Every structure is written in C-alpha cells, then in structure tokens.
Image (cartoon, rainbow, N blue to C red):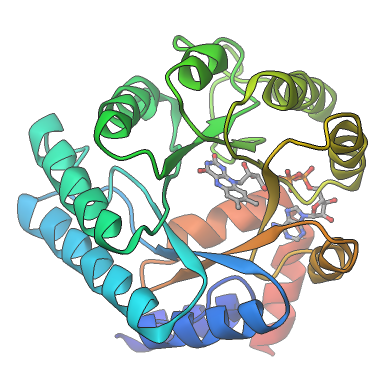
Length: 283
Ligand SMILES: Cc1cc2nc3c(=O)[nH]c(=O)nc-3n(C[C@H](O)[C@H](O)[C@H](O)COP(=O)(O)OP(=O)(O)OC[C@H]3O[C@@H](n4cnc5c(N)ncnc54)[C@H](O)[C@@H]3O)c2cc1C
C-alpha cells in the first residue's frame, strides 16, 4: 500500500474497517457482540480485466470461508462491476455463480449492491438468474430512480429479497429524483410495497429517523413481516443501538480493503459536513 493510500485509509477509518479481511472480521465480531448482524463488503468497483475480476471473486470465496470458520453472524455484499460486469456479461455471471455456489455450502446470505444506472438492467437480470439457483440472495433497490424498467413487484413475484436504499450515485436529473422530498416519498411508497407484498425477508437500509419511524409503524400493523434495518459502519451508531434495544434486527454494512475512494466519495457527497471531519483528522 502506498503512503497516500495509507493516509486516506487512516482518515476513512470511520467508514471502513481496515485494509485487511482480518480487520473486517474483528470489527464484525464486535458488531455481533453488540447484538447486530453484519454484511461484509470487499471494497472495489469497475474491474477492468478478467484477472482483476477473478482476484476479487477469490477474495469473496476466502471471505465466505473465513466468516464460516470464525463463527461470525455475517453475510457478504458484492458490486457486480467488481467481479467483471465491465469486462463482459459471461465473466461476471460466471464469477457471481462461483460466489453463490460457495455461499450455499455454508448457507451464507449474498447481497448484490446496486451501482449507477447504466448497470441497473444487467444487475437485476443477473440477480433474477442467480435467484433461480440460490434463494439466499438479495438485491439493493434504489428509491431515487424515477422509472425502474423492471419494477419491485416483478422482483418480489420472482421470490426476490430486496434491500431498499435511497441511492448513492451522481446521476442525471432525468433518471433520478434529486430533491430529498421526492426521494423520501418514493422510499415511503416502496417501503409500503415491501411491507404489503414481500413474501420473504426484506431490508430497510437507511439512517433517516423519519423513515425508520415509519417502518416501525408499518411493522406494528404487519407484525408477521420478516425484515431488518441495515446501516453503514460509522453512521448513526446511536440509532443502531437504540433499535437493537427495542428488539429490532439490525445489520451493519462493513467495508474493508484499499480501494476506498469511490465509497468514501459517496459518504462525503451524502453529507458534505464530513469533509470538515476529514480535514480535522488530518491536522
Ligand atoms: C446497508 C446499506 C447498503 C447500501 N447499499 C447501497 C447500494 O447498493 N446502492 C446505492 O446506491 N446505495 C446504497 N446505500 C447508500 C444509500 O443509497 C444512501 O446513499 C445512504 O444510506 C444515505 O442515505 P440515508 O437513507 O441514510 O438518508 P439521508 O437522508 O442521506 O441521511 C439521513 C441521516 O443519516 C445520517 N447520514 C446519512 N449519510 C451520512 C454520512 N455519509 N455521514 C454521516 N451521516 C450520514 C445523517 O444523520 C442524515 O441526516 C446503502 C446504504 C446502506 C445503509
């Protein structure tokens, strides 16, 4: 790791468990001890060669082994461009199938992150393909998209498991809602669909107090629904602990690795005040 990467990692420590798998597992163990489940992500996106995509796939295979052998209550979350979506469709689906086949040995859950809009259709169609072979997989669904070509009902009717998020990428205003008010109202609409129509598990992944309160109200109307809250490492720890104390299932998303720039950039964009925090930690 270069001095620059080392420095950036030090600054981003709030959101990233560390550069190594071992550090992610240690952090996950702490999260488990505080009553949370964990979702571990090996940072990286836009692999440009088959070799790079394969090496990320190998890392996930090793991570699945390590989660199992360490007895951690954890799942994994993958970005498809990390395992070859920019290389070609066959490379990516081949790597994804390798990962889910390996996960099935341990019955470990595999989440697929949703990236920027050009990847939307391939991500959904690969997810639906994988779902035919392995049910223990879920897909992130972004509320800020104005029109989804394959809508949430189609995913639910296919037996899919959804993680609802607001959406984190810089996108054209023709594609996404930019105003918080519209994003939140889309999130509410999709959340109601999940509480009404989801047959299996689903996840509400936000740190937004108001939306969480609304999810709690919906869960009281539909007590049989199997859902969990998901939040990112380093954000709203107070809220995570409060929800655990109230008896809700909470999973913490824990990234690790050295390819942190895209992830850290998105965390800063969500809350520009984070730039100040980063600047202060440099002093
Ligand atoms: C488990 C999980 C998985 C995700 N997976 C994806 C994915 O696959 N694809 C995708 O596009 N997006 C993903 N996201 C990111 C998501 O789309 C949002 O960008 C992110 O969660 C911030 O939105 P929010 O719902 O928390 O609401 P916001 O309105 O952005 O924030 C609500 C409150 O949360 C706190 N907060 C939010 N962000 C930060 C921050 N960066 N730093 C400090 N405080 C903050 C603040 O208190 C803020 O007032 C994921 C989020 C989570 C929690």
